[in-house]
Length: 521
Image 1 (cartoon, one colour):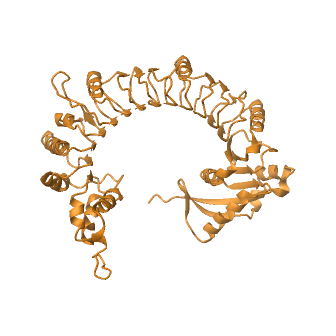
Image 2 (cartoon, rainbow, N blue to C red; image 1 turned 90 degrees about the vertical axis):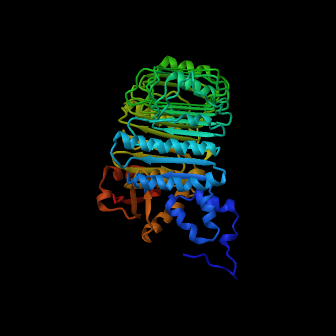
Image 3 (spheres, one colour; image 1 turned 90 degrees about the horizontal axis):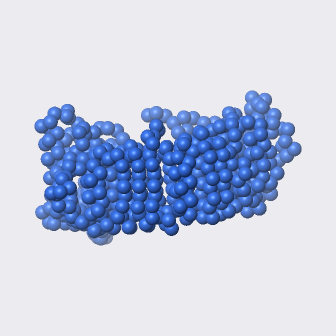
């Protein structure tokens, strides 16, 4: 393909170099396909070879586990780096993703290590600012060369499946005065090495640790600029954080978490987001953290099975998520500024019946097989929402796969189903609500409209899309048909009989949906 000229002018060649670099670096194509764009313009080849962002992946297509040969990959990386080395060109980012396509004989593995060492040495000398090394499928870990510690211009460092081998007494490590983000995932590092490394990163703002080997304890200290700390899948006995400007703390453990003591110090006025997932945190530890950090505005608890009774008293809390807390018995919440909640309760009880939801604007409530008293408490709880703010209510019955939407929920009835999911949203978020409901793949959607009929105005678009064979995918299924014709079979279901018993049945409009699972091809 050749570039077409307009009045003898090559428009592609007239593009500024930084625009061409942006196109080459930001488009989602692999290096070989990007290199083929050189035929578009006589200047394109120079711009291709001088691009400041090199993302080199041995995998031919994403998520296919099919790789180019190691010899081809070495040639590709060398060719990509050569112009930068020869002309001393600026290198903003170097991302290396490789995986072995040969057996793991020590001689071949050592040769591969040699090439990676050489590439890291080259990009460090080019003052690379963003360095990401992902040597996949390596066993044992890839041992990092000391050359990486001379990368004084780094702003972001991401390491996967690597091992730190340096001696803390003899290895000279540059002060990474520009480093803002450090990601260590599936990395082997000892505690002394970690302390030495982080002490050389005085201005780091983001630290993420995942599946760290070699450390039993994590003690983060001296990082006065640290704002975000993420710890996941790490088998730590304790996590102690001393960071006066910490804003977000995330702790996610394995499905069978080992006991881990968590202590967050100093960040009394800054911590606003606390995320605990599959954490073994105890009730006392949780209460200590929450009471000491009064500015927490977002709280997420997932599968924290050590929590049975929780008391949350906060003037600042605005978002609360409690999911899969299978041992939860009671939640006492006093949060006058709470605006958004997401609860998924597994047991037969409704543990937060005393909560006042008047300030809430968004709610997602999912319940298992509630007993009779909890079902009554749920009705009372939903009645307390401030519907004068233009809130709408959707109820999804899990067993029958039917949805009922109240545009004006001030007078509503919860269907006689003990397994329900309830969504409450502002009318302004109607499109988002409909999208969430369709991702549940309902059989029917019954709408009790207000005078505005907002939901009914949206539905004809879906009907038309299916009629014109426009493909509509939601999650793993395709919406094949939307109709307003209720079949005789559907009319004889307990759900439809219940709808007919409602006093407002004549105002209900019901749509039926037909779904098809996505092809596995």
